[in-house]
Image: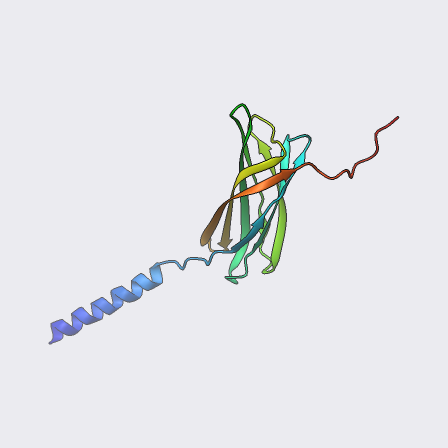
Amino acid sequence: MLGTRSRLAAAALAAALVSIAAPAQAAPATLVSAGPGILVADGAAVDVPVTFVCDTDPALIIAIPVVQLTQRVSDGRIAGGGGNAQLSCTKKAQTVTIRVVPNAMAFNAGATAASVFLQTCSAQFQCSAVIINTEIVLAKPADAGLPPQT
């Protein structure tokens, strides 16, 4: 009888230690939307707005959105690049504009494949991530600059 009690106590202690030692996983933030993108300097970069909310877990303090774009531009050639940002979580909807710089070829106006990755972390480095693969439209900017000099 004493052996059975000892084994039960050991099993209960082991279960308690496992539950204490296993770190809690942070709840992922919600990735709300991405795009449309605005071409910068004739496609030398693209500004992509990303909207997210990290209020699912009050312990979340850091958000790192990453945008990766891939676009067929001409003769089967591919323009691609990425960009990221790092922000503090505000527990409200946040929109950040991420500048995506192409690796070799400029982006064109039109459809592009986008992968948007959002990692959020707590102060104890408990992190979670969410990713969406989507298609966004790249557009030329509205004429907001100065008129040409004559």
